[in-house]
Length: 251
Image 1: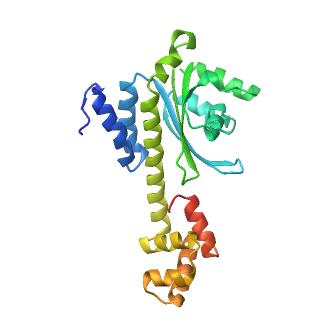
Image 2: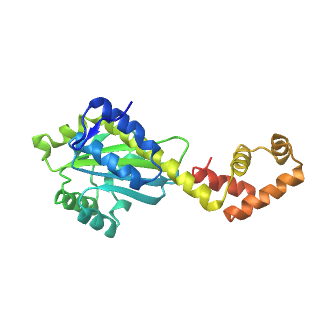
Image 3: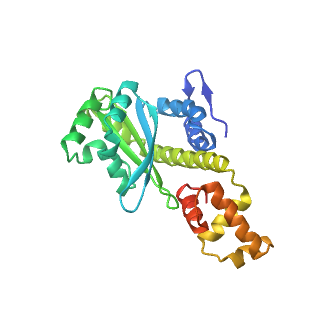
């Protein structure tokens, strides 16, 4: 289905569904961003931030990235004060999968309350938080949409009525980021399809003999292949290379 767009942006419901589905096809944020702006304009959502980060079972979070559709001054303050490390909305998303309004998420510290009060000055009076999780990866996404309407004036209700579309957007954005990150890392490490297949087999605990059979090679050739992969990835053991590849969503 073609997305119907004119000078005013997307102008049909069928168009917005197609536009959301198409988000995953863009190779980088620069190309994706204009289409995302068209979608939120159609939904009359003035401000958004899409965040991704890696979330590990021990509670660690790393590798934050932001796609920003809000006041540049706000995101500068947010990053300068490292509020992402204590953001109650991101914390909510780590252990929840359902969209919710910002007023339902507790602000348990002075820093969190300060963040939310400051955000109001930049158009974040009513907020909806949309987590995005994919089981096979440690990378997770959070779509935060907002407007400058007071909660008691229907600001949250206006945002939440789009929750099904927002969930689809969040998942498409996360998938797009995973695909782009994978392509970048594979190119950076000069990995080819045989390398990736080898790492998948190692991650599945297949011994060198089974890997050799899969490729029709000798065990000695497989160990030489392991050594080349280890060198490309800067590790000392093939098991470590497979673990790293899995963490980086290469497999």
